[in-house]
Amino acid sequence: MTLLNSPEYLQIPVHVRSFCYKMPFVVKQEPYLVAICVVSHIQATIICSQQHDLQIRTRSGGHDFEGLSYVAEVPFVLIDLMYLREIKVDVDNQTAWVQAGATIGELYYSISQKSKTLGFPAGLCATVGTGGHFSGGGYGFLMRKYGLAADNTIDAHIIDVQGNLLDRKGMGEDLFWAIRGGGGASFGVIVAWKINLVPVPSKVTVFQVARTLEQNATEIIQRWQLVANKLDERISVWMGMKRVNSSQHGKLTIQATFVSTFLGDVQQLIPLMRKSFPELGLVREDCTETSWIGSVVFMNAGLVGSAGNESPEVLLNRTQFRMSFKGKSDYGRKPIPLEGLRGLCHFLYDNEVRGAVQFVPYGGRMDEISESEIPFPHRSGYIFHILYSVSWQEEGDTAGS
Ligand SMILES: Cc1cc2nc3c(=O)[nH]c(=O)nc-3n(C[C@H](O)[C@H](O)[C@H](O)COP(=O)(O)OP(=O)(O)OC[C@H]3O[C@@H](n4cnc5c(N)ncnc54)[C@H](O)[C@@H]3O)c2cc1C
Ligand SMILES: *[C@@H]1O[C@H](CO)[C@@H](O)[C@H](O)[C@H]1NC(C)=O
Ligand SMILES: *[C@@H]1O[C@H](CO)[C@@H](O)[C@H](O)[C@H]1NC(C)=O
Ligand SMILES: *[C@@H]1O[C@H](CO)[C@@H](O)[C@H](O)[C@H]1NC(C)=O
Ligand SMILES: *[C@@H]1O[C@H](CO)[C@@H](O)[C@H](O)[C@H]1NC(C)=O
Image 1: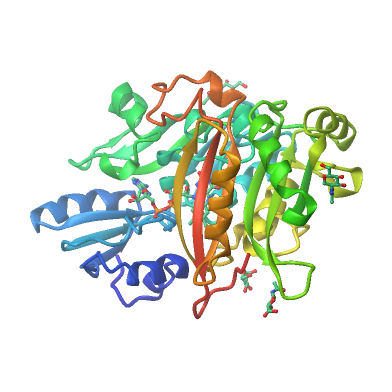
Image 2: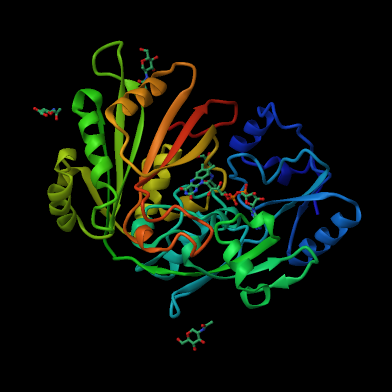
């Protein structure tokens, strides 16, 4: 158990710390106690908090967009799972047990140490915690092939309000359904997940291609909206839009960036793209062949602004992502018409904030899973996920993309 001014508490990622201090509508309450817990501590903390009329907030990776894991308007105890980080990969059975305080970066790294042909479909940012991520869904570049992290979660250990430690059998199917997409904190403290690992080829191809409005970005975006969710499910082409300096001196323009992971080699990828999405004009030189873990490093690098060819150990760095931003999710059922895209560009040109949007294609496996299979409902009929974000620079921030 650790008190508020301890070094551990001060390790809360800056992007979340700075954001919560800026939320004018939250009457910020400092936690009464920060409990850095092992399993028996969690049980004791839950019982103790009830006796003292204190609420509980649970934090795994601390990446909640609203700061829900560490702010409250009422007196509370913060249960921090940073010491529950054990990961056991079982290659023969293609499963793993991962404790809730482990990051997805630590999970990916552990899998890659045991096998070059197994992976797991979850998010990009290596510092996201499995505790919050899997209990909210968890999407990433393997989603079109394998669905969400929560779709591939097969057992869990949770501590309930009475302090009981329960597995899937003990908690029952209803509760196990709920914690895979319904938000873990509503139901208890999740201690660990058991997941199914998924097969990945030994060669994976990544690319990142940018086009400005002068380079026909508008036409390419419109085409992307029609094809991205229908492409071969081994390809996931994400599209981001932001404001950049134009090549014409002193002018601004909008740039669309297409970032992709393909579960196969470049020889298979080029003809597939030429057939389905020729407007992008992808050529061999745009592509890099790597392993699945190499593709994870490449995508994470896009977030932290590094080169992308680092060794997998970078995924273990828990302090690499420090930037101040605010994001909101949205889901699209129909392509955005030209007029809508113009409105979006207008927002991106705004000088006051550094705005960006990211579009993540659905389709593939996402179309096949029923909307009630787990609480995550955005399945067939949705063509993409949208993330709107604004970012700003503060002292202590390191990432700048
Ligand atoms: C930089 C960044 C990048 C992101 N990238 C992606 C991405 O690529 N794909 C994607 O799907 N999402 C992404 N997200 C969103 C992320 O998945 C969610 O914010 C997720 O909830 C974070 O989990 P956490 O454990 O890090 O956060 P926390 O802030 O620790 O927790 C989030 C929520 O879950 C609850 N919770 C946490 N741990 C437990 C537990 N053990 N038991 C019960 N409840 C718990 C918390 O109380 C809180 O309500 C990103 C977020 C950020 C900030
Ligand atoms: C893992 O697989 C082995 C056989 O390879 C089997 O004996 C064992 O019971 C399995 N373990 C679990 C936890 O399923
Ligand atoms: C943009 O598209 C037009 C035709 O639609 C084409 O002639 C032109 O070469 C394209 N420009 C770029 C930079 O690709
Ligand atoms: C864009 O241009 C502005 C003004 O000319 C300059 O200050 C800024 O550094 C440029 N940004 C980039 C990313 O080149
Ligand atoms: C983690 O990343 C940050 C930011 O890039 C860097 O300053 C720090 O040295 C890294 N830590 C380790 C242990 O590599």
